[in-house]
Amino acid sequence: MTTWFISDLHLEPVRPESTQLLFAFLQHIRGQAEALYILGDLFEYWIGDDVLATPAGQMILPILQAFKQVVTQGTPIYLQHGNRDFLLAEQFAELSAIKLLPEQQVIDLYGEPTLIMHGDLLCTDDLDYQKARVLLRSPSWQQQILAKSIPERLQFAQSLRMQSQQTAQTKQEEILDANQTAIEAAMQTAQVKQLIHGHTHRPAIHEFELAGQSAKRIVLGDWYQQGSFLRVHASGLRLSTEFY
Image 1: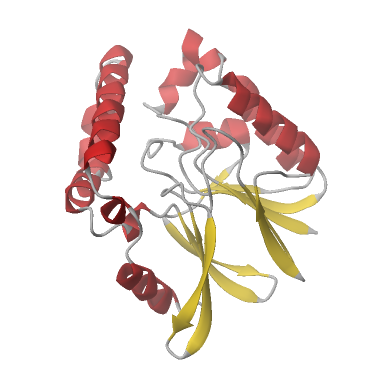
Image 2: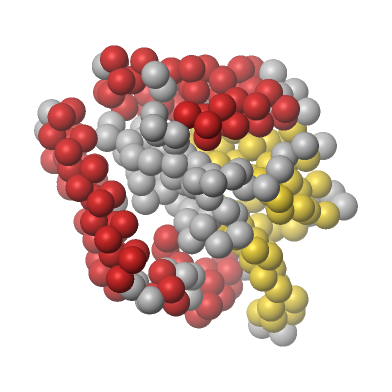
């Protein structure tokens, strides 16, 4: 059996090819995978579960139904929030049969304790983002946002996305990447030698020494130009742009 990891799909109506790739992937693993983990930013933005009751939300329902079919046929799906879809909540989870996980989770991956997360917490050199993140993840702030109308929330999400794109163009690449000290601190706190995350859109497998022992960090890629898939089984792992 195989356990799969994906992240940073950034699904949105203007990029239907990514949604079709997801459907093909789910069809491929249905009934054959031990589990699927989605490590954040499944959607380009998510303004609240109540959007599912709107005409725009009707376009999202086939995605949730596809997830539920996979779960129904024996493959559990787990999701961690990203920096774009942190408002995903219980209605989404119920309709998709996906289990929502905390922002950091240690799982037993074929005998290897492994820390999984979206990865934005590791980008500690980006001080402006980390300050904003504290606000965006605040329950009181989220309640205020969800109290606004859907058009107001949509406008806010689009402005955040535009601001994020502009910021990424002006900041140095190193600032936007995961900080090695933060990586090691997170792994030592979790008492693991293996970490899997997304967010940075820089797929790679990094091997290094942690407290005198070999350690590994696997970074998932995004789905803007192509897919990114990590498959793990008892005898090893593979990070690829293909799932077959």
